[in-house]
Amino acid sequence: MSSMRAVLERREKAALMQVEKVRAEFERARAALAEAEEVLNHRVIGLEQYLEALDEQDAPAVAETSGLAAAEAPAEEPVPMAGPPRKVTRCEEGVPVEVLGPDYRRITVALDEAGGDALTARPG
Image: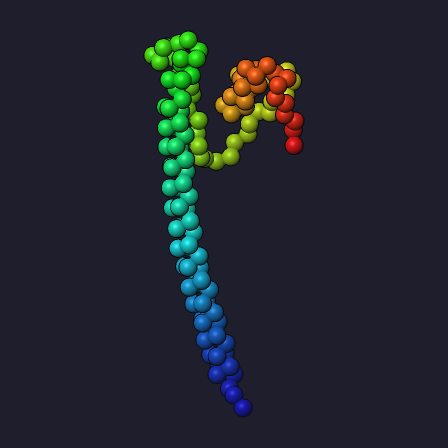
């Protein structure tokens, strides 16, 4: 018959092996997370650079169509591309356009320029 000490030592050894196994899995998951975050950061930076390049490319065309020289064109406020979620005022009847987020303002301007009824949207 096994002694109580031997039983407890086997249990301790089994628990230690389980801890080491889970610790190794955790380290692999941590490394995979760090790699995924690095890829995400590169994608965010790449998208920001792409959008900045598009803005620079479109800026002369916008200034020409509006009749303003490039130096006279109004500066657009920068749009943050990544960050924590934030509360955005919904576009509802009676809400002034100035309190809406930059994307809502752009959509509102596009709808106004299209004649209002040419494009419609409805909440999902």
